[in-house]
Length: 473
Image 1 (cartoon, one colour):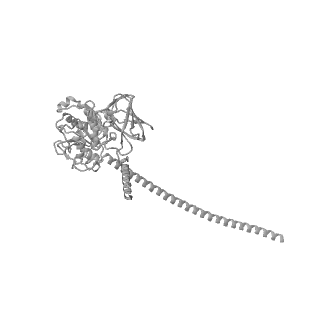
Image 2: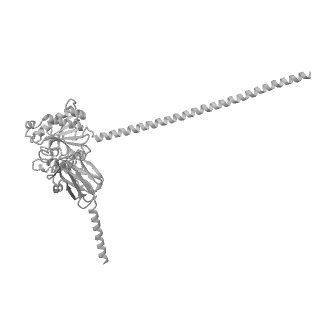
């Protein structure tokens, strides 16, 4: 009987421990089931189906109220917009929160104070939302994208014609230098997909996030149109507009390295060729203030130290994409890029694939232009110090200078103190001599007075004696 009770107690104890572990927000998934209602009366089923292909449209003045179905407080809201995002307001019990400042299509909003209810206020017409997810306190799932705005200065600027080109042809660069290394990588897409296959606007973010990038990309306004060759591309796009756009981005981000397409368009894609030509033209234009003066006035000019072209035949380098990266689960840069390409679901019908050992290898580049010398190895960052390294050096120099100034100030104070002591001792010595001289002079004065008094007394005495002698006669 006692043994049975002990076993039952142990089973109950371990069950409680298991339940505590399962329901600990730091261990379990922090996602909650949302209860969503809208003022426009639309069906909210599409807002919680996990699909980028479904959405609900809202207009100015509409609002979406969100609660947790089990009454838990909400600590974070993840919104997948399905239209270019505009600044908007989230209302919670503690007040209004300004959101959407950066136009993130996939936007996570963290609440400083957990709320029971959150209301999304729509500021303009035709704003579409694809999905809404909510979370309690705890670790977020890996697929929740928390983006940083485009960087102020980029160590590496990748210019890709389309979403997925950045992974297929340059995909190993992000995990190699942005994850395993500490470089800031900014991706620029020439194409937009709102006017064609808008699902690819979502896939570009999903792909970058899977590759390990958390710096939000910048996209041009050039439509996604297939170009069978360079001449066709020139009839479909305004080349000067492309050069102007790239020049502006170079001046804006001041990249130390630019990477773009093969001059032959990889497999012959005309828009890839035109993009490559636009980039090499813009690299030269960006340092000349007379060219595209509007962006020169806005950002200044910039002379990019290194420019690489995919598959370029001269000054070749081959990146090692087969080293495991601990922070990415031990996967190699090549494996990470291959997994990231899978996020481009709409493109999986194509014959392309991520590889470092076929004719469109994502490991092979050539140094097209340099102001810092040619490579001796297979490292894009050779002869380059990242902006973080430059800042650290400047901080180190600043600290050394400050320490030097402080040491000089201490030495100066010490010298001044020593001089003050010496001056005090000199003045004390003078005062002592003056005191001694005064004492000597006082003694002389007293002696003189006494002698004078004695002389006067003697004279007086002599006069008295003389008078007495006359009387006696």
